[in-house]
Length: 70
Image (cartoon, rainbow, N blue to C red; front, side):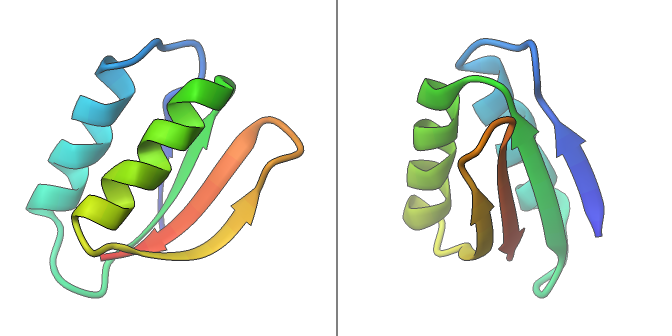
């Protein structure tokens, strides 16, 4: 599982980085996305929904984590 840590970044840069990684990944690829910004976390969840990416796990305790599968 590839880890994409976008902590310290402000949107839209994290969205661009995660979208690029998802676009180049094969079906079934799993990613752990980490951010320290709640607004970015919400936007990343929307990105996953818009791209039909499954959210397998979340952690909202901070830092915010999404484990997803393309």
